[in-house]
Amino acid sequence: MITNLNKDKFNALTRYVRVRSAPEDTFVEFDFAIEYPDLFVELVLPKKAFELFCKHNDVVHMDEAMSKKIDEDNQKWRFGDTKKV
Image (tube, rainbow, N blue to C red):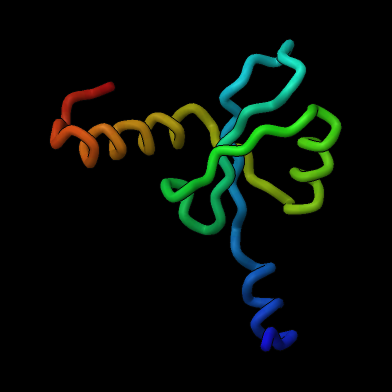
């Protein structure tokens, strides 16, 4: 059973979005993470739905530095390689 306390704790977690598609694309391809930006799901939504999704989830858009750090870490775990991507 979900209590209000548990719901409040979940709602307090930070949500991250990293857009993968080009601005002119019809659909927005993006990564969505809750609390841990390196643990994400890949999603696709029409632009208007993406805007509503971001507003509803009060997302933090990942900047270039944060994205680069995640890419480097993923490279290390996938290939055992610490070289820059």
